[in-house]
Amino acid sequence: MDLTVKKINTMKRREFLAGLAGTAALSPIAARAQPAVPVIGFLHSGAAEQYVERLATFRRGLSRAGLIEGQNIAVEYRWAEGKVDRLPALAADLVQRQVALIATPFSTDAALTAKAATKTIPIVFVSSADTVQIGLVASLNRPGGNITGVTTLNTELAPKRLELLRAVVPGANRYFALINPTSDLAGPFIRDIEAAAATLGIKIEFLRARNDSELEEAFAGVPQSSRGVLVSSTDALFFVRRERIAALAISRGLPTIFDARIYATSGGLMSYAGDDTDMMLLMVSYIGRILKGERPADLPVAQPTKFALTINLKTAKALGLDVPPALLATADEVIE
Image (cartoon, rainbow, N blue to C red; front, side, top):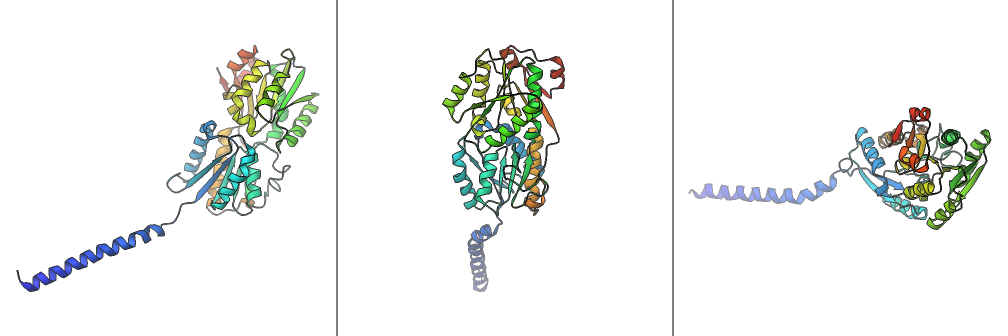
């Protein structure tokens, strides 16, 4: 081979290897230059294993907004597992991680904790409380600050729940309400349910429970022959123990109504509430809008547009109840 040609080939080989080395050296830099995906902090007072259906709706809502978990959005989940005192540390962790937004669907305790933890990171909630009364937002139309979301209209639906209990048990002579006295939501719930009861000429007796043993004691104190009915308040403790509450209510002969469908599907007699799917999708639509640049303060607190009555006939049978056909005809879901 001609020495000149050999020299040229050798030079080309060196240039090629040098090019490869340069590409390899630049690759880590190029990787670091890739923009990081936004991270949503998901904060809840309940437990993940009891939230499967709602989580599926949450992810479906993200997908509708063009947000695919693991692709162009990441989600950091934090669960208090029914122990509300864990929420401050969980919220602080999300704030330290500088998430783009904190979502607190169907967990008012989590929303209040997140609001206390940050004045800058946007917060989007679904809350069953009177959000103005508890100080979560300044007003429904102009929530102000870094927070907005969806109200379940729980206060407005309280009279309807009492009427439904009266329709199922026309001869009820004692009306009980289950509360956790240590919850920040207990006071507003007491005011709301007593106001609703007054319009119907009903007196409410309260069952108080802040832990497992008190929950058992509260139900044990109800005479089985009381001809009573029960309204349950919203609480993290009750949410994670909803199957036990349903069983205790049956054991004491207490027809019970709840403020979320998930309680009825867990063995409770009835629920009447805004549609879970509708409210979750409303909340996630706000998440999409905020991540695209809108301010929470400019987004009015949304309200459900669909309401659902769920009746569990298995539980009715266990209680020895004949649900009126007219009421069954109006139910959106009947569990048989």
